[in-house]
Length: 112
Image 1: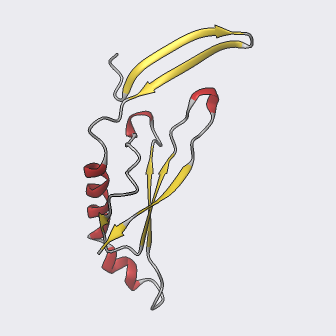
Image 2: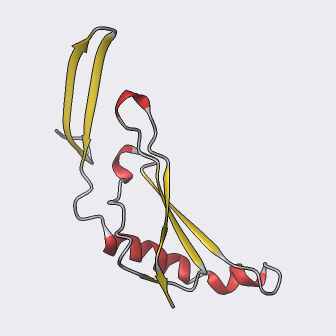
């Protein structure tokens, strides 16, 4: 269709006007892509920890879907990620049909 991340677009009338349903492609942007994002932040962990009080946990929030083409498959809860963060969370903020946001935060399993 010529728009990055757009896989399908359906427009049809309903009783209240028009519905538009968008199919978003996230193929190839799954576990490996999420690990690459975590790796980029892992490089900064020492600096982050220096700014925290001793004994504090360091959390990372990854946000997907803040733009149309930035979607990422929600990672499997069974595959742990390599990280120096104490906890890692994933938020898919992609707008879904009827203008509703998914806004679902999941905690990802981690290994150190």
